[in-house]
Image (cartoon, rainbow, N blue to C red; front, side):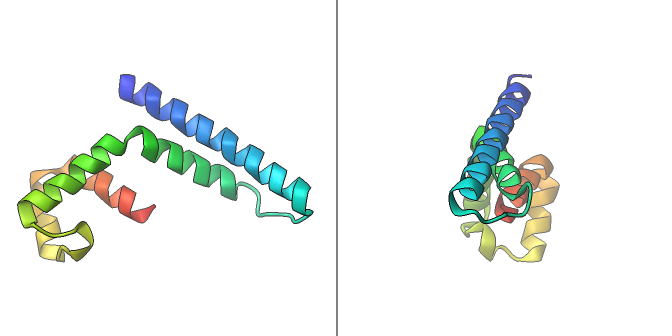
Amino acid sequence: MNRLKRTITQGTVGGIAGLIAERGLEAATGLDFINGVLEIAGVTLGIANANRDLITQAYNITKERLNKEPKDVTPDEWEQLRKEYPRVMDYLERALRV
């Protein structure tokens, strides 16, 4: 439950920071940004920040098991890790998308 609260809090703070940054940039420059871009980026970064220990753990497991960077893992090796550590690899895939 503690992780969930931390994730929600960090995501909310990131979204609010993104909203403030977007409005400030629009007011300062007079440009109209696509609505929600910075808010979504803020939420994503906030959630990643709250769960960075899981991302670090996933990275370390990949390095220990295969002695490779996650980006260098072959699809077959990735599936092998996914079978052994399904939740951990899910977090790492999400982090790599960001």
